[in-house]
Length: 233
Image (tube, rainbow, N blue to C red; front, side, top):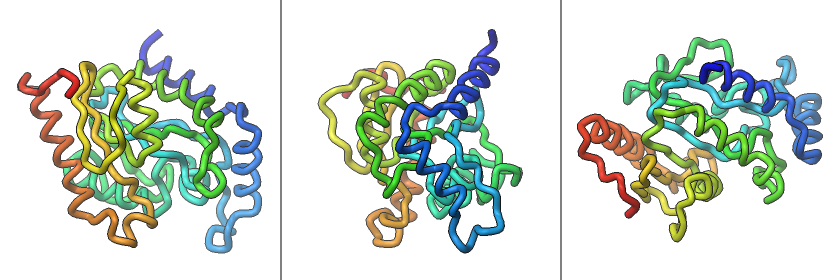
């Protein structure tokens, strides 16, 4: 079976997943009740798969779909303010076809990047339970196994950072914006999540955000030339 076929089978399993009753119930309820500004739209209301280039060298890992973003549109980081920041920065550095990600059929495509999340269902108040994170961990692991060319992982927020460290068996590191860990398999970069809580308060500025991705691009280039440090720091 090809990697693409394996990924398609995994995505089918993710979409059908109901291992977390609290989350399954919540995303269905949100999809039914909606919010006023999206009242005329049909919500996805199911677990979300990752998306992007199966040959990606850059993996972007978020926390979870937004209740009225990905849970509405059916695609990670699409249709909300966080998605706007992700699309814009990826476009600026040459990894996306356009600077906006508004809906699943809008023509937004990724080159050399794959986007996913630690949790596949929007959690109430953006606060997942440990058992829910544990249930979803297998999906991230299987994606990572399929995406054999990944050299850099950008983790958006502490939960994503902790999940990726666990995935790669990295111990002894605490989350911090801009932290870089050179692992034997790839390089991990930690960033604040581009949520409104961070961007509107100035905790995460555009220049700080852009710098994370420019650093990722620089590290990818160093892998190409064979000059990247491949040992844990």
